[in-house]
Length: 467
Image 1 (spheres, rainbow, N blue to C red):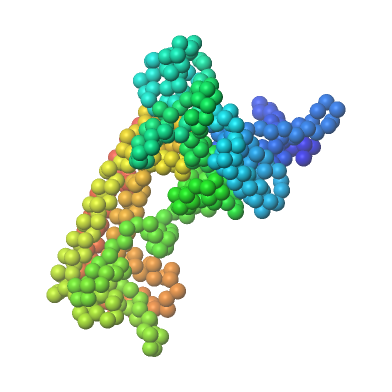
Image 2: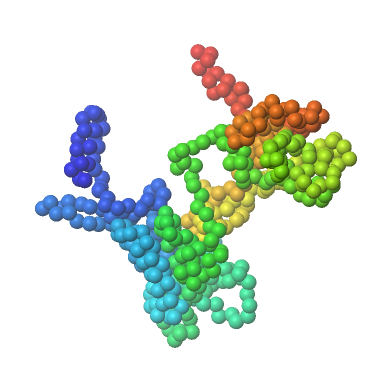
C-alpha cells in the first residue's frame, strides 16, 4: 500500500511545478464520524523497514476533559473493537457485553472511585465566575477555598457527582439543577466513610451513554436504544433518536420539484376535512381521486369535492348544502392551518442536535449556534425551518392545481388518460378549484423563500453591464 501511495505521489507531482504532494499517513482501518472527527489505526515504517501500528484520534470525546475516566476507558475499548477488523457481529456483541459489565460494576459499587473523576481547568479565579452555580468544577473550587486550600487560575479541579441525599420526592428539573451542587472533591468522598457515593444513574446517562452512542452511530446492529438497554436504562427514551444527515453529504440529490407528491409532501401536515353528511374525517385528495370499483374492478375518477366515504348518504360537496359552502369550508380550514404553521415558524424554536441532549429553547447562543446546556458539544438547529414552511405552502397550492395533478397522474401506474380525467370533472368543480388555486397561489407568492427579484441581479451585475 505504501509503495502504491508513493507511485501515486510521483505521478501527481510530475503534473505540477509549484505544488508537491506528500503522504501524510497510511491507515489500516478508520472510523470517520464527521469532518475532523475520526479515529484510525496508522501504519508507519521504521528505519529498518519494519512496520509499526499506531492510533490517531481527532475531535473525539476521548480527547476532551469533559468525561470521567470510565467514560474514556469504555470509549477506548469500543474504539479498539470497531477498528479491530473483526466480524461485525463479534464487534457488536463485545460492545454490548462490555456495557453490561460496566453497568453491573457501577451499580454494585465495584468500580473504584477514581473511575468517576472528571477534571476541568479554571480559566479565572473561582469567585470571578458569574455562572458558578452551573459549573461543577467551580463549585468544588469554591468549597476548597472555604477550607483554606490553595486554588489559582489554571488549576485542574477533579470532582465527582454524588447521589442525592434528600429523601423526599423531587422533580426531574430539581434533580437536574442539583447536579452541580452534588459535585464533591474525591478526597472529600474518601473522608466520608461511605456516606457520599457516586450518582451511578447520572454517570450512565450523562457520561457513559452519550459518547458511546456517538462512536457506535455508523455501526449496524446497534442503536442508542439498544445501548441504553444494555446499561439498564429506559430504552424507550432513546428508541426515537434519529441522526440528521447533513445536506452537504447527500450524493444522489434530487430537487424537491422533481419528486412525486407522496415523497415531497410526506412530512407536511395534511389537510383533513370532516364531512357534514357522515361526520367522518378524511384527507383532502386534491382536484380528483382515482377509485377502483369493488365489483367490476374498473377505475374511475371522482371529484375532490366529494366525500370518499362509500356509506355517506350525502357525499356531494362534503355534505354541505351547495358547492360554494364547501369551498368556503375548505379555504377556511386551509387558512387556519397556514396561520398555525406560520406561528410555529415565527416562534423560532431551536433544538440541540445531540440526541442525548435535545435541549429546546428560543434563546440563541452568541457562540455561533453552540448548545446552551453546560457540557454539551451539540449544535442548535432550527426546529421549523423556512424550507418546511415553504413545503407546507406548496402542498396547499398543489391540492387545487389541475395541471399539477395531471402531471402527477403521468407518474402513476394508472391506465386513465388525461382526457378522461378532464372530461369526468364537471365545469362547476373546475371553476371552484380554479378559485381555490388563486387563494393558495396568493399565499405562496407572498413567500420570498424561492423568489429572487430582478433588482437583485441589476444590483449585483449593474456595474459590469454598464461597462
